[in-house]
Amino acid sequence: MITIQGIDHVVFRVTDLKKVAGFYIDVLGARWEKKQEDIGLYQLRVGRSLVDLVPVDGELGRKGGAAPGAEGRNVDHVCFRVLPWDGEALLQHLKAHQIEAEIVSRYGADGNGPSVYLTDPEGNNLELKGPLWAPVPNS
Image 1 (cartoon, rainbow, N blue to C red):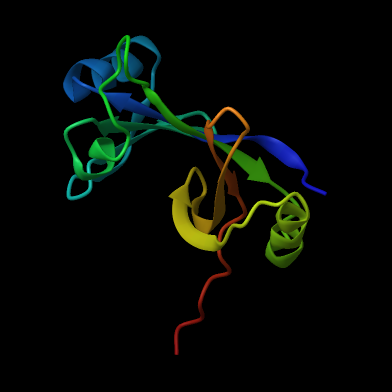
Image 2 (image 1 turned 90 degrees about the horizontal axis):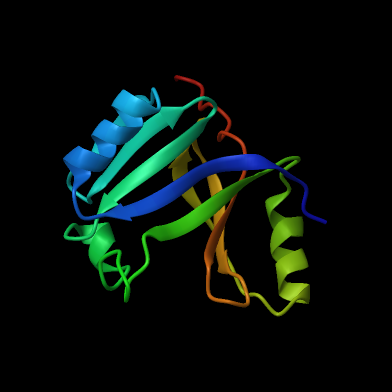
């Protein structure tokens, strides 16, 4: 069974990063969290969650198809926080529903941790996000 605790982050595909970031910062009070310019990922903190902005002309943005508009989509995916996290049980649960998936490491609202990607029946991309990875002790 999967227990969703809330939304970790939402990813918006954008054509004007400066304008959209300004809206979230100036109007809604978000603040910069992390910028990964090499792949085209810009993260804003909104409370306990993140809003990720992905320019459509960047590495990640090009993977999403047409730019936002009549023929394109602007929401890349929604990420749900899953706790408690049991990665192997989660994969088995999904497999029982004929969904093949794998666990990958991704940065979310609380930092780096496990994620599983899948799509719903309408093709909407979803991410199931676990807690932070356990800290690695210094030797």
